[in-house]
Length: 419
Image (cartoon, rainbow, N blue to C red):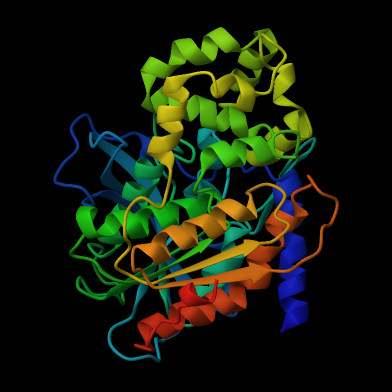
């Protein structure tokens, strides 16, 4: 078992360093209708999606979906995703459960949408664009237990507009509405009132954390049994400071582009503080997937992108608007009603361990049921992302058991009082 998950870790790390997806879906599918029908979570359109790995040990039927959701301000938008209906029966009590999965960082170009890449295991476009769809590992782990899975593409990834990377409310809405949409699909193994759980790591961990605390007010009808949030970027200011100069420096560009999309009033502040190179970086990453961004902007310092030569952390600290926007993205200000498992590596070199632990403490103080799990992997090439990526597959056995137990009615553990 350990060897298998270590092999998975190597696959994930390799993908995070060099992946760049290739589109496989017809682009017309991703163009929303002029008027969005229905309410949040309603299906707009569907199409069958072939799976290269369907003939494997855990086959599933895949359906590409478009559904209505809401942006960070509550305005209607169209989001795409993928539903996986497993052939393996659910052996637990009650109807087949559903996991709404929030993917980790894919990039900001439309070609990076998981619903365009997850049908294949590995693809290559010369000269250097290689992608292994690493979330397939975790989708398959859930399918192997007879759990249905729906994966959101998030706002603006595949569909028109800029992907609002790590935007708390937009990602939470997309994840919860994906579960609502999946329940509307005909002929599946899930039921309209069946149990749901959330799953995500890194960007996905933040989305899962944001969704579980927003669910009581946004989607109270969902029978939400729990949420797994791995390495959640709950505090963007802390994450900005740590990620600067690492292999994922370019993801800061995703964040700035997303802020400009969601908060146009911030555009003058951003433009004023960036130099020509910084503005070029934003333009570049807006059309890149994470592998290309890592190759082009990895290990660079944001001080090379600013007009003053200061880091973006220093620059943004001077602006009340930036402080306000970071505060608005902070996760931990609401109270989850469903139990939560948070995993974080003590030496995570991209998403700070301390802010993940603070999230757990914040929720514990509000009376939520929280299990906080530390990954003890020692530092390995700090800044290369290994200590961020490896805890995902290494922690999956715990997360998979935890999710399955929630669906099986086992009381959720909590170590709030032990910290």
